Length: 543
Image 1 (cartoon, helix red, strand yellow):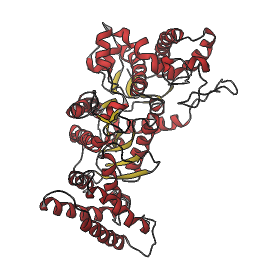
Image 2 (image 1 turned 120 degrees about the horizontal axis):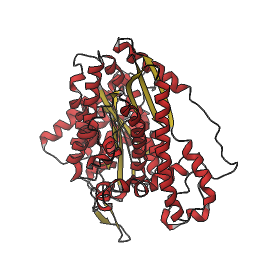
Image 3 (image 1 turned 90 degrees about the vertical axis):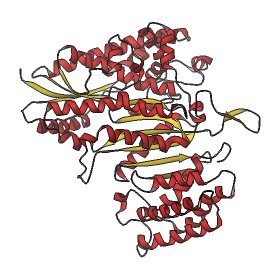
Image 4 (image 1 turned 180 degrees about the vertical axis):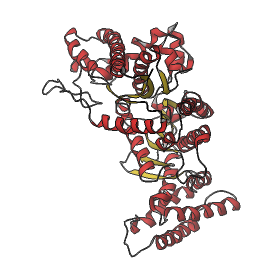
């Protein structure tokens, strides 16, 4: 039977997941999308279609959907995009069946959650709005090309045409009421209920919300719980850290007393890490046939479903690293601020090690992974931190030439520190050494601020006076650094002191490189490295 190569995409993803005020709601949004994707996948799988990406064999979440709960089944690992081979002429029929199955599953979930809404005091008069909003979610795009026998050409053609298909979305008029209050997280859907309903203590200030964000909140108890043999087994597997415990560093919470003698985390700042693979499209183009593509998918699935958790387990006893999702090369995780860089680097290194068979050591532009990191107070709006982590990830890719990290650190005063660099640059080693040598509450803690104050008048940027070269700027900063180092004592051996100065000189060469973004650095990075260390590793109470 002749076949077509087909790609299906379900969304929105990042926008929908980020609409959350708690870690559990964020996880629920991610899990709900994976669950609905499983419903669509099952239609194709049951029809005997061959999946190219992802490989569904031994996918815990897919097993969970099919009635076989596993411990790992509560980790969202199914990507929102899948590619498969379907019989020619059956593409639209199969897509329509998958759409129906997904919508039917969402209706079942919605009906279960509506029962929860009624228990909280909802009125049956609101049901029409509820159903209307559920019907409008999610967006499903698909496209197919006839298989020609040239696998690489077919995959490339499908990618191009799918991108064009996504640009021509099927817009429908939103049937909302003029002047109605909007969901506080999405800003789009009309809220379900009124002020009295959302003043209910059961919501704990979560709303007011539209239907889909209500479903996020009610989904675990109202629907998923019934998929387990007992409530105890479900909640033991699904228990999650809240933002306070993530900042504190463990489930119990490392506490300290503030001036009012109240328990608070010693360091109240947490981080969100968004990681995404680099040059994945280029790697896919090199796969010569379906078998190679399937093997690639299996390797990527191994990273998402097993290796990511292995990395997090290494951090589990030091911190409350909380995985939100791991879909292929796309990972979102939360952790304490002072462990963010180490965890991001560990995830990236694990990705490189997992995918090493597909990385050409001789290639100028190799497959890699970039991370965006956003750091904020545990009471800072979670939705904002997630959005900023995604923006930082984009900067790592676009402003720093991929294979890089970028950070946004939000002080409670409103100041934002941006920093980043290439994984292989001296940045991370210098950061680690300086952090080790800088003792809190000593003269050395003034080092980053003194350096920043000295460098501020120079207005360092790549758009500085063209008469001043990068080499000249580097020498200026080098002398100012030496001046501050002579006045601010850091702890550490003579060997460590020397090593830090050598790393600083090497880092300056990277930051003030004429190569621009290809070096991964920008002039403000040098002083911001030390400011970032001081910010992420300080004790509670410092701004």
